[in-house]
Image (cartoon, rainbow, N blue to C red; front, top):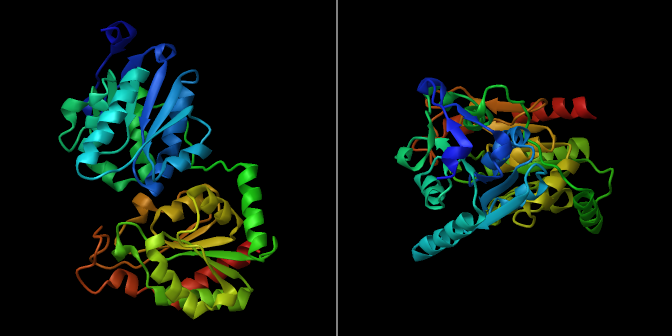
Amino acid sequence: MIINVLFTIIIFNQQKGALLDLDTKKVNKILIRSVNWVGDTILMFPSVRAIRDIFPCSHISVLANEDVAHLWTRFPFIDEILTFKRRKGIGYFFEDFKICKILREKGFDLAFIFPRSFHSAFQIYLSKIPIRIGYKDRGRSLLLSHGILREEGLFNVHRVFFYRKLVEVLGNDIEYYSPRIFLKEEDRASIEKFMNDLGISKNRLLVGLNPGATYGLAKCWSATKFGELGKRIAKRWGAKIIIFGKADEKSVAQEIMSIIGKEDCIDLVGKTTLIELAAILERCKILISNDTGTMHLSAAIETPVIAIFGPTDPKRTGPWGNGHLVIKKEVSCSPCFKRICPGNHRCMELVNVDEVEEVVNKKLMELL
């Protein structure tokens, strides 16, 4: 095969990962298989930007499911976005067949597979991309040309470093970047009009609340406490409280609104695209959130986050960057990483409104 002529592959100490020795100028087409969740997608941005540094002249495509594909439209270090739908049943196989056909026709030289699932590796394997880099767990070893050893310590580092490890197969001298969303002026102008239509002036203090969390009710602080906190913030600071979330979290938003009052609160749950959400978050002075994708989106456009953690570990998935604060109770069963708490939810129940309000007030005094 032509790949044997183009690349010389050298494998070093597996404990440190495989090191590829290749002529980067001969890598014409690169595929990035994106992860499937909003927060993780944002946290892999620094690694993809580093790939662009290494391959400045290559055509870089991203393969992403339609739930997160819109995020990549505001990431200027790639050339193309390929999308697929996450289907169930027989539709699952037809979607894979369609995607694999497209990928084979495009003739990629190299693929980085950021998800750890068997399916993502199998999808790229069927696409006949000669160099396939990913973590070699979950029975994926035979599907990868270069499987990276997932060392025990990688579970205890932040996801930014976890994804960066895949790029270090090309060398350790890689620039460090922070996750960033690069909004366009048209995004800001559109949101400005949206806010004006809602009667919110440009100078109005906005505070965001994100009371939900995808795949994890155990990660959620109670709606009653979010509501009481929002009510206090609105009263003390004259702030407009904006509630964010997915459409299926509507009942939570309504409960919070009933406590804060409609005059001081706006329900945007399920009403924005990811880019619109980012643009509104940029207008907010702070975001108060559970451990969820919106938290990472806020950090990526540099709006300070006050994050409430319970069953998950902020060392792994906390908001990235300076100026963010994490509230977490040290209880014996946390972090457990369970989606549903089998006990009394102590890790979240012990976080009271008074202490979160104190942190919020200090942060707002610092910012205003």
